[in-house]
Length: 123
Length: 106
Image 1 (cartoon, rainbow over the protein chains, first blue to last red):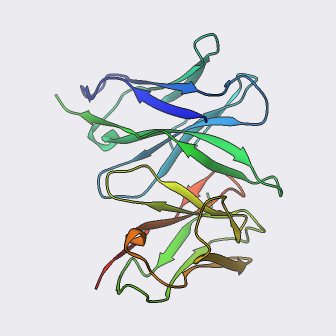
Image 2 (cartoon, chains in turn cyan, brown):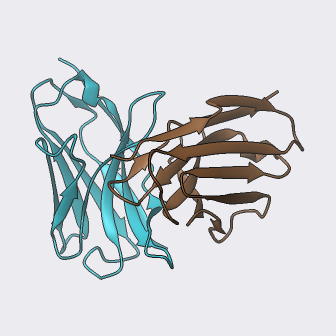
């Protein structure tokens, strides 16, 4: 059973870099067939996809965040990470990591999620 | 980006009611429309993918339908554990989610 667990600081100062790690158990992030994504949700609001990393190590980001986001992987540790720089209060949210699987029609679906971690941007 | 809208934004219903939630996309999605359920304080959970395919383990009272830009999630007989917020999501291009529909107790 694949499980994902986010970790990282719960408080980040404005203009600094938000850094989170997703630890994956029960499956390898470097094996084919899945992508690995970050998604966030401000309190009381909807979901925003941040970006993904492929087993090859290449990445794909939401254009609205692309200039500030880096997603990387540590395959020996079976982890992938999110760095979001120059944060403001608008980046305060619950951050989720998620596995992207593929349907029979080739559609990407977020089929397994971590429990989420709250990050507050405040002085 | 493909914009997603949902209606209603919230609804109140009773146990046993039939509930219908609508999702509309700003452009045609083919089969790339999926539904998630999120309970308070929890991560979203995939319910339905490819418009109408139920994820394994999801009760059969949930169903999805639609095509093109208009899609529907139906709960045939609402149960206590179904009170939650429901999101549609498209994967035709850069993933985007609808704003959610909160289902609460009447």
